[in-house]
Length: 267
Image 1 (cartoon, rainbow, N blue to C red):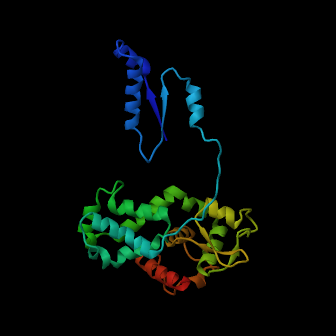
Image 2: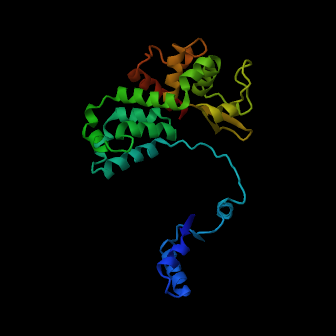
Image 3: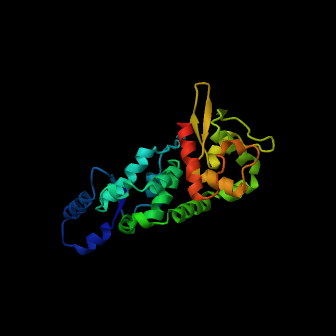
């Protein structure tokens, strides 16, 4: 929706000898160039009261509707990387054999914001280093990329500080997520906190997916978020010990083994 300003007084001064109808014909001709099927052009002339113009552009009503956060499946994430590869003149095979890139895609959990952070770390903020990424695909430091993405997400969401302030909640969230425990949106995860599961979804780092017709849901947390939780908690507590593989190490490569088991278990 475009508001177009036309100084008709200036046009009249330029062509004082012309007929008025010619001036307005010229104005309409100029306005026509701005019309397209994709936008509506509203013309107003100089001298029009500003408040009238402002009033016209305001919507007559507002409506809000909450929509579920759509998590991208693995094939959709792969298609995104394929798009950047082919757009830059590289074959999809250039990266298809790099399993560590698949690990990074898996770590995002399909969360759009996490995928965005990963793409920006791989291809640059304006995707200006895409060629460099694919040219050096086999020699990249994927652990460093992972750490950068995790730090970007922590900066955006304040994950570490939230876990420090809500350790008990963080443990319950991880427990219910990994053990696939059906919950209700009205559940209070801790007697010491008044936040329901629904409010935690709205303001924190988890996604609720429908589980049954009676209103129960499952908690989904992207693996990269879970890793940040665990790093802040230092080590799995007694509540969480049974959720992790024996001999699991708090390093990126070791964490990928956990992620693979976690994804396979949920499937």
